[in-house]
Length: 112
Length: 112
Image (cartoon, rainbow over all chains, first blue to last red; front, top):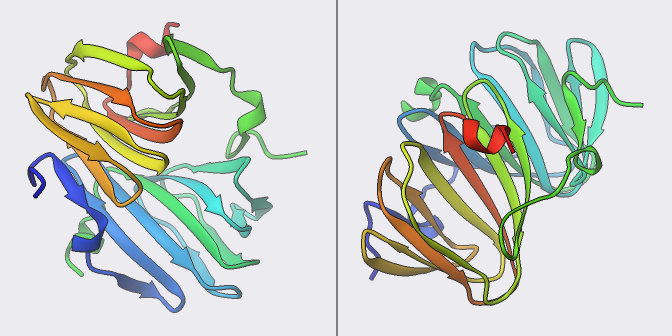
């Protein structure tokens, strides 16, 4: 048994497919949404923007990210800090495991 | 070459040993401090508190965390959301790789 207010089990978090091939587990705090996402090779996130800052870290694999028309392959050594309202899109070059950290909370994802 | 405002290389972030055996790379945004930390087996963080919320995720290994006197072994499937001002301490059961996400920014770590 774990003390559920402080300690959490990933198994208790439902998987949500917010775009085809993007399988997310979301953790919402008062200030952030943290997205542990597994992405299937070849999956594409279309160009979009949002008012949240987004930090994206790659735990495994490679992900092509384009921010404000600037392309970069993210991998475990290279991460992104996407400013609020910056346009961005991307494609999984391999199967990937990523962490996105949004600030403030993604109320739109909470509502899913 | 990478576009340094948005894309960052972990190799460019200095390692800081904030407690013996805790080797950190800090990323400070406007709203968060993100701490990628490698912890050597047996290393101890003494009991402390801070006004920041802290989310702690284990990428590799096991870490014994005690929050408000409640112990829990963290590992890749089990994480912690430590409330502001909660007393916490811990010990690395194995060599570990952790991510701490603090909100708001750890100005004390920025000053290191």
